[in-house]
Image (cartoon, rainbow over all chains, first blue to last red; front, side, top):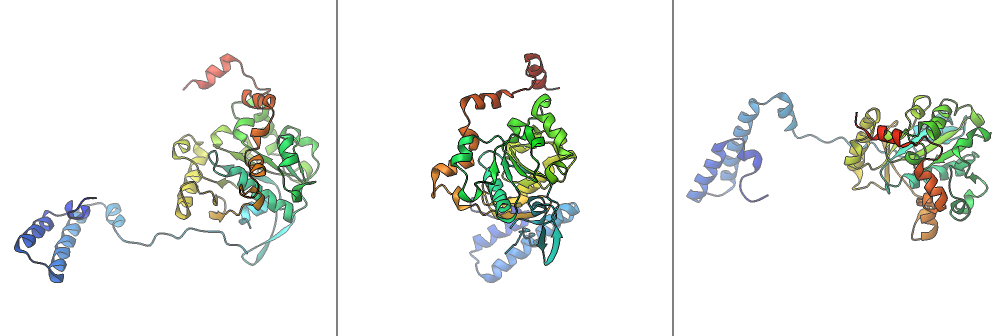
Amino acid sequence: MGEGVPLHVAISNKRSITLRNKLKRLGLEGNHIDDLISLVDEIGIMNTLQNQPIGVRFSTVKSKSAKPNIWKYD
Amino acid sequence: MFPPAITNLLLKEGQRFEVNGKFRTALGTGVIPVIGVSRSGKTSASYSMLDYVIKFTNRPVILDSFPKKVIEEGIPDHWKGRVSNTKFADIATVNEPAVWLVDDTGVGFNSRDWNSNGRILARTAGILSHFGGGMTVIFTTQSLSGVDVSFFRYTNLAPVIRYVDNDVLRFERPEWRDIVEEGQYELQKVSNPRHLDWLYSSKDKMLVKVYFPSWLDKKNNPIIADLMSRPMRYHTLQDKLLMVSGKGGKSSKERKDKENMIE
């Protein structure tokens, strides 16, 4: 994958990209700027998911994958 | 060593074995189909099971139609005296609770050779538990679509899944495709790409680490390892030709043409 915004951000909300460009032009950096970007990203993703079926929304939830069932013997 | 469903068929009828602190009594008769593409370790995994049979039971082991050369020069010392190469077609002549290894069933017992070996399978499946006081058949095959379905209908099964290529999987029998696919999904959780050290026991719903006997290791003795891992290579040319042509089967041109048609 090339550089740029992550795919899930790029397809969720154009404001995330506009904001990134704006902040870059202004030369603003730092933790508080990163927090602002992730806040806008998350709002955009949630807006997008609101219009998706439950299956799609569920598949975006982070969860532990089931451990393989391995036969143990002495 | 093996999970309950497999152990249940490998031990002699009535032998007891422990599962999670509780004892069970072995059934000692049924079919263990080992499914996997070529060089996926089907035969080697079967030897691992037979080694268990030799060590923990007094059941005789029969390597169906194995070349004489393999029986004489390939089998390990502790197997000697316990192993023979009787043809599966002669199963009625065996009066002991034998464990059979029928290797590469797709060639010998092809469902298209219904008039020959396919019929033997159909007839014996239902009476495996009677012959010799209860027999077990381990058979290896690249795809169950090539094996006569009657063999699975009338007996206890403990299918073992090894690596099956995605493109081969598309041609698996619809009844079996799910478990073969499930096996591939489970196997890729622990190894890849060909999962040689693991098998999936679909009845137990468990992955099993396979410990191969040391005599199968190429580093120890490459000649014995090859004799045992691809025994059919050591048949005489005449026997190989008979295997490929489907001896005894109805093989008229008209029938072959009909078989190859897509209906």
